[in-house]
Length: 356
Image (tube, rainbow, N blue to C red):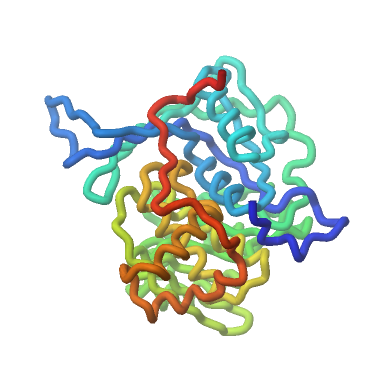
């Protein structure tokens, strides 16, 4: 696996590149549906995949890009929990030493149905009981942390990580209260970068333009990055005043599940590697675009083999704008020469085959 931080590593570095915490779901994704299910009927899907989801989408995306990823999460002691633990630890190489198995707690589950480039999800789960005592070393010394901000809620670990010297990258979920008050995001003061989508950014800043929203957010956090969906992404560095905008790669979107997580992983990778802002945006957008061409969340997160295969493919075929591809010329110095044939597929139809 390509290590994007190889030239920067020293013996005194922390063992963890990126730390994150959250809820792991078992994701079951039905694919190949021609339309949304109709009430009172039975629909047959042409395919399906299963994988760890929730915060596991982000953890998997980071690990596949070669970052040493530590995840602190609760796992049920059922078969679903065992499968998710094994898939993340053994399959993806994610460090779960700060995670725990909760006796008698069943794993949260999400069933996703993908059709017409969108998806519909149904989830079930119960909040895991708190640990009897805080896990030691949480958060661990790390280059970076990824936090999902919760409006109106202060997460002590975010402050602790920042004070320890970790670079904190944050996103935020939908504000169910409808307040959309920037004051509710008090943990932003501990963050280096904030990456909301356009709708979230505009609501928090009371603007009707995502670029204007990014400029407003740059007053609250050193780096504001607003994702624009099929239009790409826009970023403002509040310290230097630098701005960057990169259009999205043209792809046929099958399932957008986890695309935001993959974008974050790509941006964190480029930032830790010290790339220019525009290159970081381009790389994050590319990884997200590759993910939406596949089904599922962590199932679709691309690694360096997928990125290399795409780069070799688009330079040989005329299915992308040649001028736009020049934006990705920085990949020449990064990618290995050999790659598997394009396109690549990851999804498997079961909870997991047992190795004989």
